[in-house]
Length: 266
Image (tube, rainbow, N blue to C red; front, side):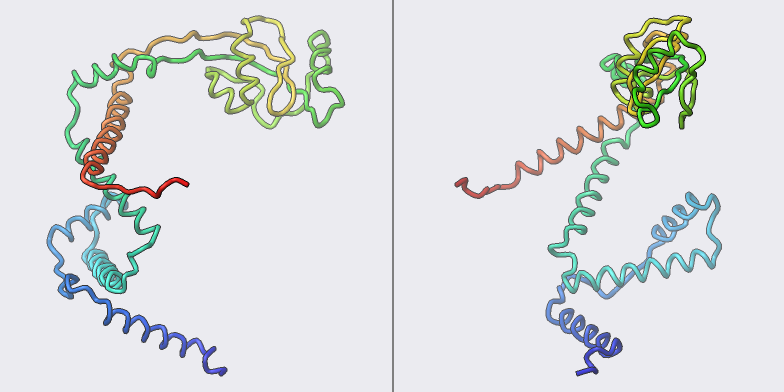
């Protein structure tokens, strides 16, 4: 039975199985006629131009069309074989494409200035500039020291111990509490928000790395950014909300057309 292990034999057997499946299960509505429209060629050229920042040459465009034809043939043959059925990846991709289509329709119209301003007024806190901190720190490693917290505390009155080498920066400017939390951990960031500006070192402040003494030089207080400054972001935020609302409403409209039966609870 060694012939059964021959890759060439397996290839022909596999091909024969696919041919039989295609003949037995071939749907009548899948055509063997492929017609490439001018709009298809233009779309391919536009996509190439966006990616390559130039129009495709005749040779490149011919290659793109050949690839489109190959994809279309493979796609139709896969459908004839029923490969699109009960496939989680295909299902998710189709759901994604329908979602994108809904979003594109919902955001096809550019919002007016009045709509943008109204959205800004309804969501003012989203456009508030948070407090910004300027500080230095000295790091005391819990891995290198027997009692890093106590060493940091002693260092407040002993300028000779400048701490341990630190993988990140020793000084930070104009950082929000959220950005500080991303760098040092939530505990460190929360403690920083409670410190007062001072020309003296404060601490110890615990982080994800160990302990730190902090020189909090200044804090730029929170303020509301004007509409004209954040207008571009308002547009993006409004479009995202419009997409989300459109998808939710579209799903509800579709769901109302269906009768749904759930399994009985035990």
